Length: 173
Image 1 (cartoon, one colour):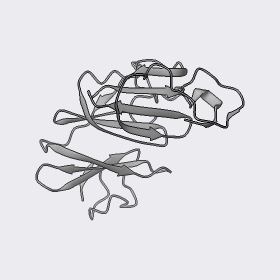
Image 2 (image 1 turned 180 degrees about the horizontal axis):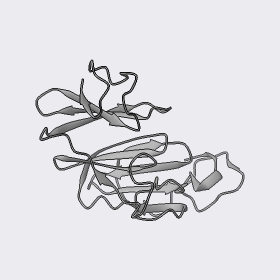
Image 3 (image 1 turned 120 degrees about the vertical axis):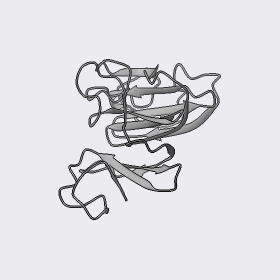
Image 4 (image 1 turned 30 degrees about the vertical axis):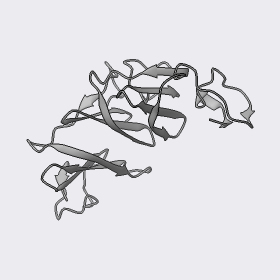
């Protein structure tokens, strides 16, 4: 990673100045990276073994490791399982862990114990994580095993932004 090192977002142990050339992220050496998500002050990776690690700003529990202490090097999240997919936007992240979705950050775990939470889809099984919006409202959508889509996030759907003909959330789309 390279660029602005504020909050330790590059994961190289530094928080000052800019890195104008690629920097090695500490604590991920030797791992084969499957997904990387760069966000507003923090970054996360998922390796091919399903381990998710994050680094950078953690004031809103963005690192998913059970505290609000920022880290300039990669720390493992507390998803309690093996991730098959990772997405992140703004101050939130979600991982597909088996047949569940675990999310953490400002909209999900910004209070004690600051650990990832399991999203309830009312008996539907998630199969694929979709992208989300990066500004308020923060939304994430999931493709279910039955080919329907459900969206959720830090919205009450009061304006119908989930597109399901109602103003309730989470909801089928």
